[in-house]
Length: 165
Image (cartoon, rainbow, N blue to C red; front, side, top):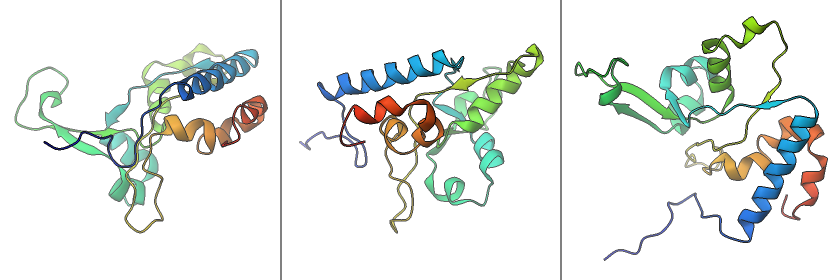
């Protein structure tokens, strides 16, 4: 029988490392709250066309790095399957999903500036030539070097949580 292991490019977060992550995320949430930001959580997968439209169909992200599949059970949203599947993708980035949610829920109609932040996994396939993304979900990437650049000015205390940051 084959040994079960985490999929290549992923890893388990175990105690005490999860405690560190909880502190980092709690600190981020506290800082964002202090500056009036609200947390938004979008689905971990979306319709593929959202990302193809958002980042461009000819980019490496869309053509090589996304995890995409056809979901026959979600063909038209009505619950009936007419033989065509909807193409779904694990989110390679979160901006497109946030914009979709902003439009879908008419957040712009409030007349108020929407200050949003997100924490969550993002998925990209590692390219074989070493030029692509890390292949890890952004749960690891977010607080370390990936999306943290977006929030860098709001999270200076987080950088002291671990020497690996």
